[in-house]
Image (cartoon, rainbow, N blue to C red; front, top):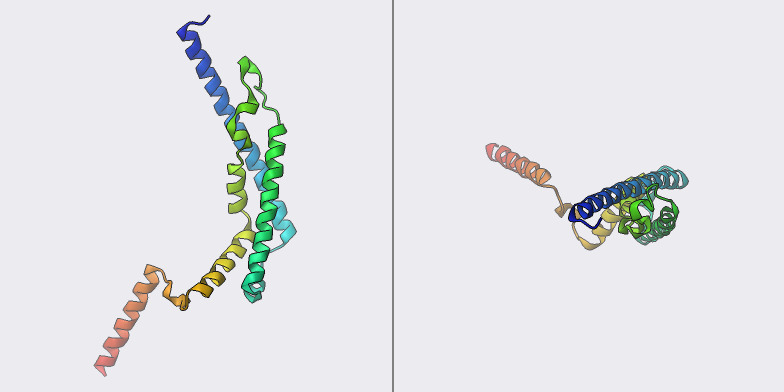
Length: 165
């Protein structure tokens, strides 16, 4: 049974099972990530931008680093738990679930946790704006093109009005 046709069929079968396993792993990470996001946001409470605006920059940095530490620990725990969850087709035709590289790769989990935490996103926005204010002497020099265009148009209108008087 070592014919090339048998090897091709077996290879296609193994790759198909592997793709199913990768999707299975991604779905498990997704579920864990959404649950973690909800729990973290409930634990942290509703984000209040005004409170962080009043805090010194160093305090926001410390809070953010601690939040990232929590996420790092969660990634470690979830990755180890996901590795313990069996795959229904493990052992079928010699397929080994433990050998799939994506099993230990928590990229899906990390992306979702970093993207969908409202508390973290709010804090990162304040941290960025306060940090940029430290390094840029005139924070107003960072403007969008549309804002710059409207400012130039306003200046042109002001100049033309003063010329008319």
